[in-house]
Image (cartoon, rainbow, N blue to C red):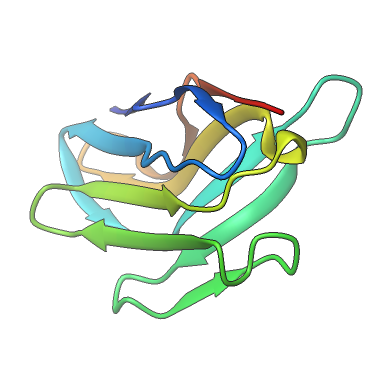
Length: 120
C-alpha cells in the first residue's frame, strides 16, 4: 500500500507565494502522472496541474503563468510553486497519483489535503 502526504500550505497575503509539496511512501514500484487538485468551500474539486513521469506539465487556465508543477522522481515527490496568489486561490489542495505497489498493483491515491488561504 502507498500513502501521499502533503505539506506547505498556509496563510499568505494576496500577491504572495507558497510551495506545497507532496511525498509518496510505501512499497512503491512506480508512480505515474502526478497532479494537484483543489477544492474551495461550496465548489467542486478541480484539477489545477498535472505532470507526467517524464516531466511534461499541464495546468488549468486559471493558474497558467502563476503556478508551476514539478516533481522529483527519486524523492517520490511533487511540488506546486504558487506565485501571485489571489483570494480566489484559497482552497484545500490535494495531490493525486496512480501508484503501482508490489502488494496491491495499480491504485489511485489521494493525499489528506493542505489548506491554502489567501487574504486580500
